[in-house]
Image 1 (cartoon, one colour):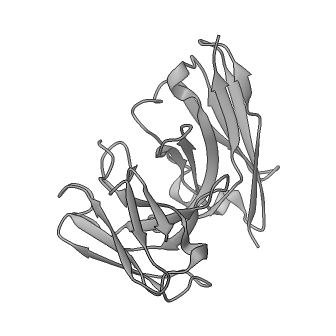
Image 2: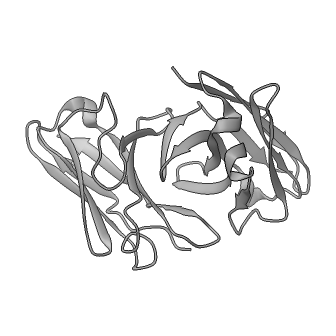
Length: 119
Length: 111
């Protein structure tokens, strides 16, 4: 079975940075299309970004609200996905999920990690 | 890219059928068959229920079905059960720089 485990969330001040991790088992991340999706407290889901598999060149896409501030990367040797978040604002407060994508749907989700941006 | 529009809440009695709509535009729902549906229980991660408009992943009950007409996709839950009480979200590929958009979410209540 595929298992995704996020970590790295916490409390950070506006303008600060945080790096989230997503450790995978049962799935080789270098062969997968991996996404980050966030959910604001009490609100809905928002797509954050995608890193494609190595066979698709590892191409990365970002949602407009995070482009230029967030960076998605992957350590294939550790089978771990990362989300580096810089210049954080209160609008970035959310639970962040990593999820693998198959043909336009998000198949397996981690349990999420909470990021709170507050002074 | 605006969120897809879903009703805030839908309710039904056990055994009944309910349908949740998901309205987008001709640039997302209307343009692609990459529409999926997710169930989210309180405090839990979303769970894929329907992919590619109407495909049920392995292990998902046949009581859940999906369809699409024009810019609107729909999720139908037949034979409603207490365990179906949760939030439901649709999602669509957009083909734009923001690749995916989610729906506003629907709370399903079993009366």
